[in-house]
Image (cartoon, rainbow, N blue to C red; front, top):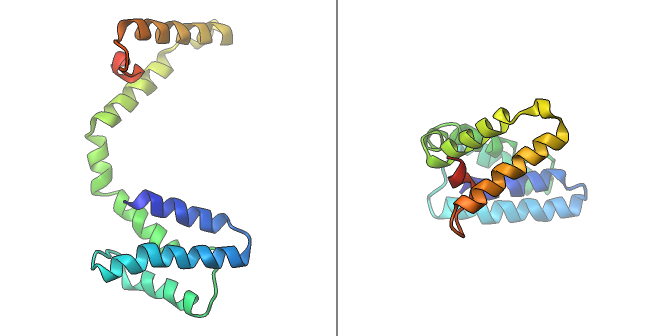
Length: 139
């Protein structure tokens, strides 16, 4: 899955200590890039691998070390995985929730909106058996 890798890379980019960033870079390389290359599941360009290897061989760890990977991951996620998400029940529920949020009467003032939202939640809570989420009630 791509998201743990992206979050690790983003944490690496925020790290200010050079020694800590070097340790994280090596960890990301060993646990994601090298592991995939050895198991022949690596789907990223040779240029991305070469970019990372070039800097790691020199013991340099610039903040943008994994930028080619991030670009390729985002490009991949815009394709088939995003299309599947748009067709999923999760996206439908998300749209329903956003629609509900937008349709709450804002003109009643902050206290009225809060009371209205609490009323909706309490109505849904009473209508649903225990263990059934609020999103199911709102659909």
